[in-house]
Length: 209
Ligand code: ATP
Image (tube, rainbow, N blue to C red; front, side, top):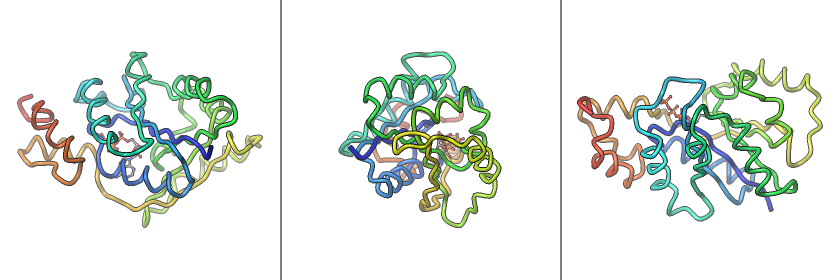
């Protein structure tokens, strides 16, 4: 088995930037499965606008047509603050020791990685794939990389590796989408069509919602 990719995020909402970059990393690292993990109560940022159930549903709608992609609801089911260490511990117990697990992170997330809860233990459970957007030099990552190198991690194929993976730069953010919807614009082509419909049906992100 080539490996499982894990993409954590608030996904408020999940958009094409998340999906395309995950696709490119899966392609580059020959991952044969991808799990998207919406956080329950994110600990490193402001709280989401959509409920956990709504964000979970938008991820489900986005991945349902893609073979071997799935939504992992463990953080939402656990409730409370979402820590990636708990999610990876659970996943490692499910898949066993022999399967490489790759945690996919944007450069922004990687820069703050060493402030994550039990970040050193995360590197004992899996590898990091840092998504570097074309034309955006990962200057802020240098310090984190230096720190990780200093750890002299005992890297095997399955844990402790850090790989920078170039991805297409799609300048889309969930913040921009929420803003556009609140101003009465459609998020068409920024999110999957089913998500666009869902946002409309649920009245999500509208100024008066
Ligand atoms: P927000 O604007 O609400 O902060 P976001 O669009 O950045 O949200 P998150 O759910 O916070 O999305 O991000 C989850 C992960 O996806 C992060 O690691 C982030 O770096 C990455 N990411 C976000 N937008 C993109 C994009 N356009 N291309 C590639 N990766 C992205």
